[in-house]
Length: 341
Image (cartoon, rainbow, N blue to C red; front, side):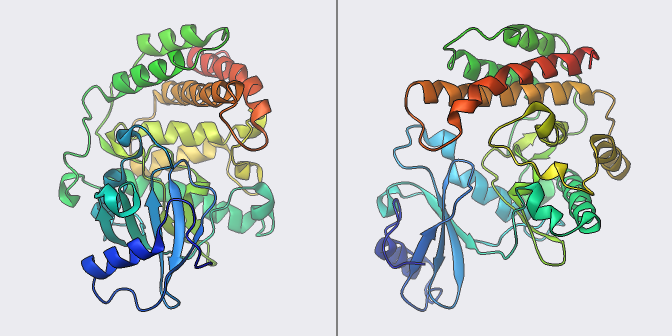
């Protein structure tokens, strides 16, 4: 922790705002550090020497506020407080960009580890790894069991036509990132569009549910679900489909994606699906569509990263490998949908 202002966080202005909105909350000089690993929004750990909080704000120089909606994250976590879904306690939301240059929110810091690698889980052993993976599924079932109306989130999204809108959204993203021929991409989209299943009861959808987006304590309990920036009301099987797809990371050599599911003791795909089905009671007969859609979505995301890499707009290592990962995702998505795998 350092008293120096990290990029995007003016500690003096933050302190003045907290003193004004939450008198007595802060008892000492604030220090801060940037937390690595966030999906796209900037995350800071802030302390006054006695308490710790987390501050979230959009990335520096962002253009579209709707792409980094702090109100969405703050609202869903506030709504889920008191439910079986563990979330950090929210402190305040600031939509006045004059304070820090963008809207932001503050939440309580929660102890826990976001397991990202198989090596981290291997140190725990197969039995503890299995317990953590099972808890991940159970927590997802708990989330999908929450009544949105009962927690003030009845208008959090539009479940009607959810899958159609999602497919259109990601096709638009793909079209905006085209810099090369992608054999099979349009065909996979058309296959998905022609086979959209009827959604079951809507639920609160996380949007990017995976092991490294939750915190786990020393007793292998999930203490918080994080990164709610893509949350909405919609078809909950999109969460399950994406989680199943992430678990196939090793087979597809997916760069920049957690390999935790390859750790000894981690349940395989069939076991994960069976546990969700048994505990949720939901009809999973069309799950192949959701898994195929997740492959398509990941392919679009990686193609967008590759597009920015080609333009020299990415910083860091590993981006040169992104482009080669797109075609296998498209192929596997098509195979999943047509039962050719």
